Length: 439
Image 1: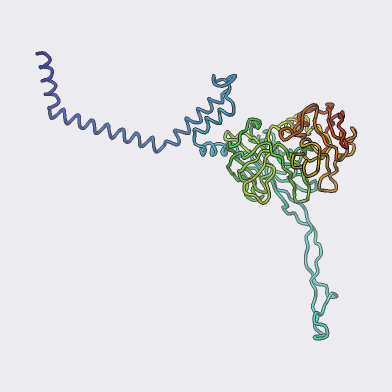
Image 2: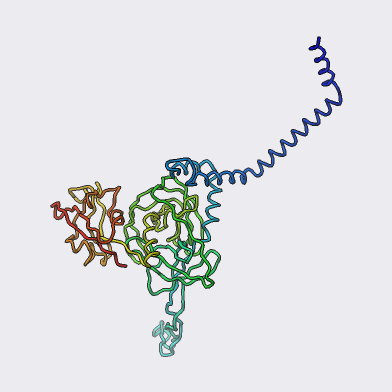
């Protein structure tokens, strides 16, 4: 009986017109509130998403977190987490953070200025006897002083707040010109070349602030943990005209070896460089290659002529020691062996009837001034000659994974290394004492 009474009371409540009206209005109001709330979230989803994405990644990269090995996530795990979030937001954030520290370099030089004049004594008659009295003056040219002209350009980036800048050596290799740096805010500064790296295509220049202000500078990342397919950003003075141009791409290859040349005919072997499809144009040389966190992972150095989006950058881990050397001593101090060479592979072995398919052949460059063995250098003193084949350095085989240049960069000045070489078909070991490379 009591259950029946409860049911009757419930029926009276739900059949009451006032209750139905209140319930209907409340339900409609709830639907409207939910719709407005979802619309707000949808409209501002990118900002909300980016906020939590950045907070999450900052926590991932925090050395005090409890994730990963030793309290740190590996670069691979961080890259995996980054792929969850919008690439566009990371690119925009990285560019905003790094752009102020990227500079443009303009190279100018005093060149002869010519003018035309007419010498009344220099007349000609092109018609000969047909019109014997028809003569006209021949315009002549003569130098009238000099004028300053821009003859080239490049890029660079600050690595310290006092105005120290990294760029390519080939950008600032001339000694009778003026180098001008334009910062991202449009200010103009005269630059001084501090050091040119004798081993890598790297140079460091410096500008001073007239007001004593500090310059924004970039953080150096880790190029040893890069992966093919990883997103990268290139910033530089494209074509020497479009300053702080941004391009985005991926790492297309690692540990590439390429022969780079400039307009004067000089060539240089670049080994273990990063290949990227991020657009790198003339004028981008010396600019930074960045990861999505805004850290420098490479220095843009060359492009493949006749190709589309095939560019190369020097790994920042190869450049770091040069930067530290300049900060500590004011110059770049590196060991060197003093040979030019060509890497040997199976194809080269077959074509030249060699007995080995690895190592390097000591060989002169294309320019007649590029000798195979530097006179007076460590290799010369040890008796290395052209056409010798260097097989190993201190027991480490030279192959497509381990290059001569990379092994020498790991050594110190004064180190004694053992070279296993083939000299006229005879294998022997040679002791070489590394010396400081000269600029």
